[in-house]
Image 1 (cartoon, helix red, strand yellow):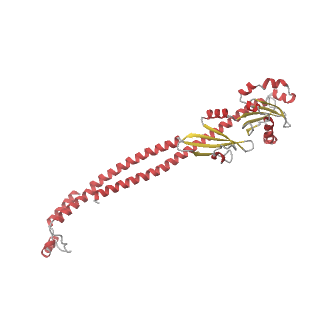
Image 2: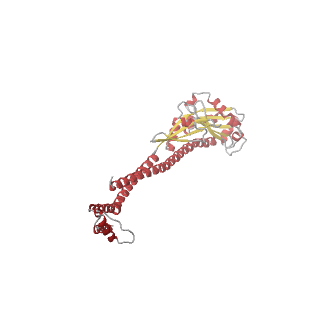
Image 3: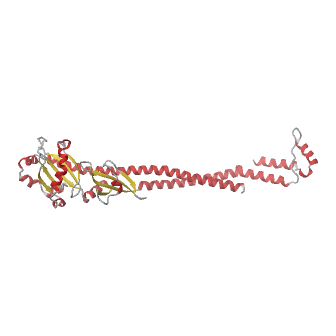
Length: 358
């Protein structure tokens, strides 16, 4: 292969290889960075869901505290007057504050009164006994049962998961002694999940722990403090979390699906960088070809032409021994080897032409 095509081909191959390597390096580093950003964004969404669900308990606890710190409730726990029940245990008013179940418990841990607001609970007469059994350990625990602020948590019930808030009963001034506890319960149903999704602006799916349709990633979570993030495909990423009951057992499992906008932005960035690298490589190759053509290839080609022109004359060069005149030695050589003599003036002219071209 001639020199010029060989040099051009070598430059093209080198440039293409350089562009490919640079693209791979950029793709790895940039996509890894975007993947980290995407994961942190998914973890923030999980935290938003966790905070949003916790807010349900906080709101319920504020409401139960209003009833627990109330002279009328305090008085009822002593005299069991029917007027208190008639005036306060009313479906519309309790449904308005999103309370599905109310229970009053005496200091001996026996239920005094219960009232079902949600139709699902109204159909199940065992809710009071079941809820009382679930709360027994918590009420017997001094850190919870003796806590003047009460406690709130999730409880797994037959009728469904229930956010439960418990508050000791004192006077409106907060004085005692305590005459028992008041309990508010709110079922975590589809409408509650839909409301939570609206408030958090997240695409939420809820699963009951132990159900057959629980995603594998949810089932792998070992505690409610543990979360998981996993891409579902090129377009969606999912975050997983779980909610435990008062005693640390899993009750609810959650999945949040989000579009992979950050990942797609990373791919767009890679595409732009690839174009820029490709254009830069093309410009580099063209500049190198032009420079090599002007300063190297053209001069070598010129020298090659001069050598071929010299070789085209009859005869050949005879080298002069050290200490003698080149012309004299050539003349001497011409006498001894007339068939291999080159015209000295032609050689000088060729060398002069090369020097000028350079």
